[in-house]
Image 1 (spheres, rainbow, N blue to C red):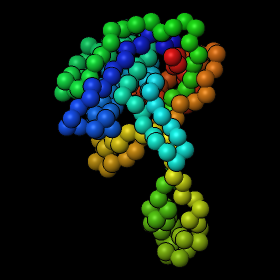
Image 2: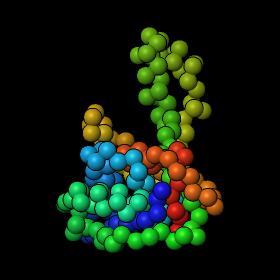
Image 3: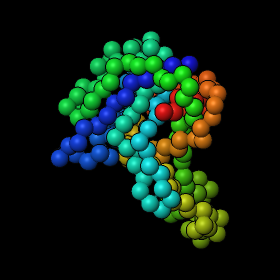
Length: 191
């Protein structure tokens, strides 16, 4: 149950953009969650903005949600090394008891039709014409969700981690969170 939280707020920085700092913060959190094998710590981005065909940002606050024990276990890891000059971190606090809840999850999109066609050609031994016939241009989608730019630790390839905050609901839903603090079904308090 995600009863407590810690807010990590990015400080303005003349050398690094907010997006760059949030990417570094999320990458460090991911490595820490993997290291402690945590599936009981969720995240939310309370200042996120998601406007269709407009501004998309996660904002400058990353909120960690969990039990006091789980948050203390994470914060003892000193995973914020290198970020301390760029952040403000609150103390552990209880979440408001009357707060609604919502899921915070990853959304993946088929964003590059040429890449999808190349992949199909490799997997099925098809020609470019066959792949184009099987995968029309209309498959390509432009995400309108806020995201953070990350680099895969296994392949080294850059990717966008698109974040969707689900609708608010009155009752919390328990469940597991992944190594980014996201979940398809488990909720976190929203305030």
